[in-house]
Image 1 (cartoon, helix red, strand yellow):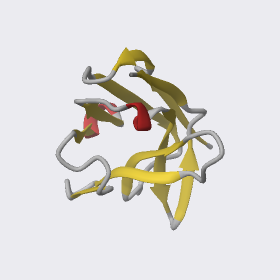
Image 2 (cartoon, helix red, strand yellow):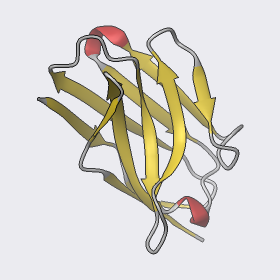
Image 3 (spheres, rainbow, N blue to C red):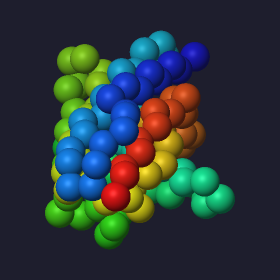
Image 4 (cartoon, rainbow, N blue to C red):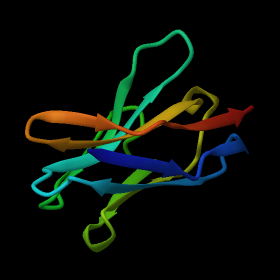
Length: 115
C-alpha cells in the first residue's frame, strides 16, 4: 500500500508563488521517481514535473523556468515551488510516485490563480 498526501495548495493572485509538498508512506521501497501532474476542469491530467531517485528532473514546457521540483529522500517527500503563477495554472495538482512500473497517486490539492 502506498499513500501520498499533498499539501500547500490555495488561492493566490497572478504573479504570486506557492510551494506544494507531498509525503509518501507505505510500501515505497524501490521507487524510481516522484513528481506532479495537474488537471484543470474539462481537461485531461497532464504532466507538470518529475524527479528521479538519482535527482534528474523533467518539466512540462508550460512551467519550465517558473517551477522547481525538489525532494528530500530521507523524508520521502517531493516539493514543487511554483513562481509567477498564471490563471492557466489553476488546477488540481496530484502527486505521483512511480514504483515497479506503476504510478501511485495522491488525492490532489487545489491551486487557484486569480487574475
